[in-house]
Image (cartoon, rainbow, N blue to C red; front, side, top):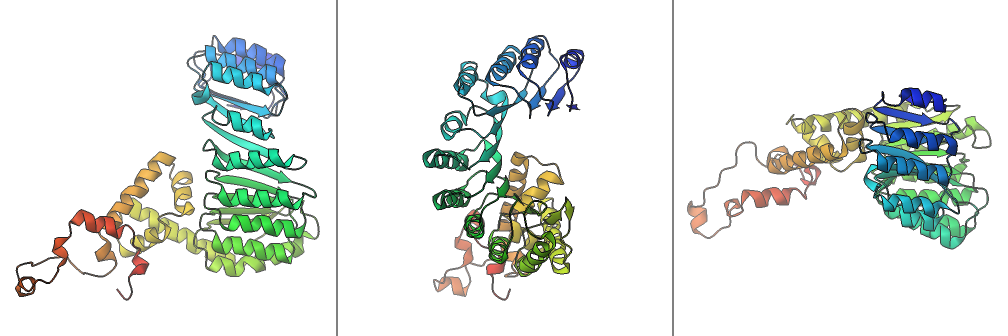
Length: 408
């Protein structure tokens, strides 16, 4: 159950009868938190409670955490944690009761040191970060921690209006070296040359699967940099560009973007969802872009068929091309409902099947392989393939692709 308007009376009525409750954007304050924490001590049915995008201060967060500690049946509590001088008191409660395995946190623009000392005090987290008006040391610590924190998989980064060049370089390096972020929203109200530098960092990123870009003015150089991201980034699966608040003429920028990334999409086999929106409506209607997206989606479907037992060469070639691609993982998770641990096992098993049958799919042999070590050739001391163990062959073929075989 998701609630947009909530009161103490409403929560009192719902307590004891729900298993999942999400209360968002209701402007709840510490008074609500105190009463909710009291009810949590008696509630034995509620399993998931999300109180996010509200106005709880450190006192309210501490009371909710103590309510979580007193309730042994509540599996997940979602809270917002924003920068505050007394935020360390909230961390102390988290550490005292060892609540990391039951806590989901949305970080709202914390200081670098606050995020660094408490980044592992939850099971998962998201983050909103405004990088403007920070001290250089704080910015560097924040971005380094964000890039290395395995608990944070989703982030929104805002950068405006005229950052020093060193700040832009730090952001570009952080984007290039991020290890765990899967979903990223960038809001870049910065000059053209800074936008180009940030996009260069995205070219080499190998973790971000869904990228949203807003409040960014796309000049010709920025469009060229975006085209390089599309052409060189092999992990990106979903790309969304919102032009409503970008500044300048929306329609000219829309035309430049579609024309600029048209050729890049012809060599990109990984993006399966691309939208360039004006007022939340997708205007990327270029034929070449749509045809490339259709081709990429067909490739994903054939690869998934191979994972689920189809053994044709078409399916094998598709899986071979996408074996480490983010689009394959994205489709398994969003369209087939597979959790991360499940699709990792599925892909691993499919890789073993591909390696075990590599010589057949590559066309090296057309039927069952047979070796005759005691023939005349064997007596002359010639080496034959039978001296290699099948497991060794399979292990070796894991490092080859079907496209590595010339003229099969």
